[in-house]
Length: 291
Ligand SMILES: O=P(O)(O)O[C@H]1O[C@H](CO)[C@@H](O)[C@H]1O
Ligand SMILES: Nc1nc2[nH]cnc2c(=O)[nH]1
Image (cartoon, helix red, strand yellow):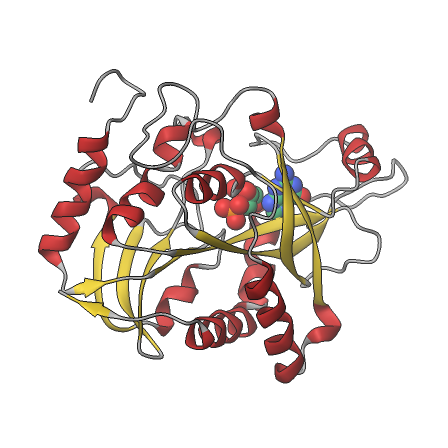
């Protein structure tokens, strides 16, 4: 380590080497589970799992609904690694810590990152329980200069000035839509723009009004940093938001959101999400390697 927050290439490599020495799995796909969505890992066969606290260099999860376990395994014959629990900026992690696993995954040989999250909706047509395929994001902390790529650029991972257009892979988005159609769930599938805010508070009504005017469809406190680090190092990215609540936009509305309610809705859609992710991975063009 150089300084408290700066992580160097050898730090990522050390963690990757440790994991490679502990498991025979050589994943090509990584899945990050959002709040209450850790069950996505349950579908993996022949699991090797590691508590974050046992993995050298790994940060720790502190949020309810984020178990803090890294699970390797096979999904329909494709080797995957799944984070049961992610790291958020509001937990006090630096953005390089938040995104640390993504670069470790790159060094493990991962080519595709699937991010999932729980989010509140701003779009008037969305309902609680909808699944939003992420078309694009607005990274508020990033626009304000809080960016995991700040600091010296590590050219071994990617360029100093990475483009951010077209990051959410078009063909995977289309494939996801087709799968939802064949699963008979398209009536609650949307495609839209995710906005990351810093959290940990949920939005004030005035903030909700601002995000709505900006054309944000769903808001949460994660995902954008992981996606931009993955894209920087050349990974293909796919993202899903589960709409766990409608963001309160009116002073007349007496509803209010809580993390417990978010976790409750995540549970409600767990089977559908698991089926969608499994089918998407099974249709991906991936060649498995073994150790
Ligand atoms: O983005 P994930 O990790 O799904 O979690 C979402 O849910 C939590 C709030 O309930 C926040 O952490 C928000 O970002
Ligand atoms: N910022 C934010 N994050 C969420 N995560 C789940 N729901 C919400 C929400 O309404 N706002």
